[in-house]
Length: 233
Image 1 (tube, rainbow, N blue to C red):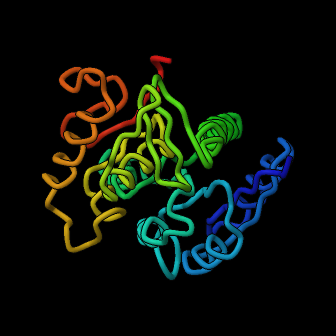
Image 2 (cartoon, rainbow, N blue to C red):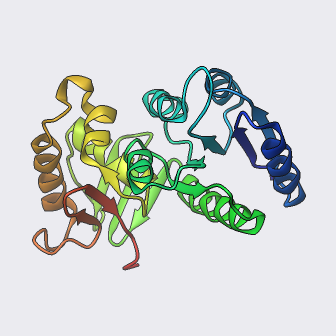
């Protein structure tokens, strides 16, 4: 099994050294960048399993780095834990809305940091087990062949319905914002037209749920978006 790689992006060298020491002490590999541009470059080149990203960075701040990562299809699913000295609720909300998976405020304890790193990597590992095919309930989906069956009978999905379901499954348990789904599947020109997502979700539910009025798999998170869950298996 390959060693998980963590990228730490922080302009404070002593913080980087502390994090690197404790990350590697727990069996992971840790690489460091000291500004936003270098961090983005390393994220693209190194393809880490997790990014610890400070918000207040020279060159390009953490918000911009996060946005650029989420726009790059090669690394857009990389989990990000944002780290900052700011404690205001607004900063936390903005970071999460831009696609951060978790948030730690300085000063943080090493124990808390390691616990959060392990929790995020566990979640990602369980999602990455979903590779070529996936089964849930009476449904089987093959991502390579773009094939879905329910009770061993083929179910026809449009390309966008299939792509939408795949994104939800590969991010199982994570709330996916409507705007993120629009950007990821339909492109920037659709941003703001959240009804597009809602309509496709409704069609998906009619095809895969036993009762589309009381869905088990695609959960609505009111005012935010949707989450795929398979806790009923």
